[in-house]
Length: 112
Image (cartoon, rainbow, N blue to C red; front, side, top):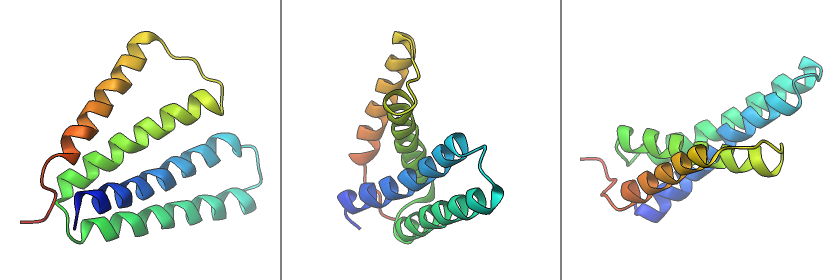
């Protein structure tokens, strides 16, 4: 699997994991009849993306990549959509995560 496909599938998983967290945060006061199906749907989509990428890629590589991308997506959503504020130190930490993602993308990701 190419590195671009690996990153895209990992990003899909990260997006749906982050979406489940966003749903729980913003819809937390909703009835469970709405909340639980929405969370199950997003987590199922995330699992599908993760399974697809794990078929041909190393486990450790994929998990770290998904977590790093999910962290960055969550950071952006928290700022833009939820109005959360972060310090320069926290922003620097996010930049370090971004460098880590770039480093992971430059290494071979195929299963051996």
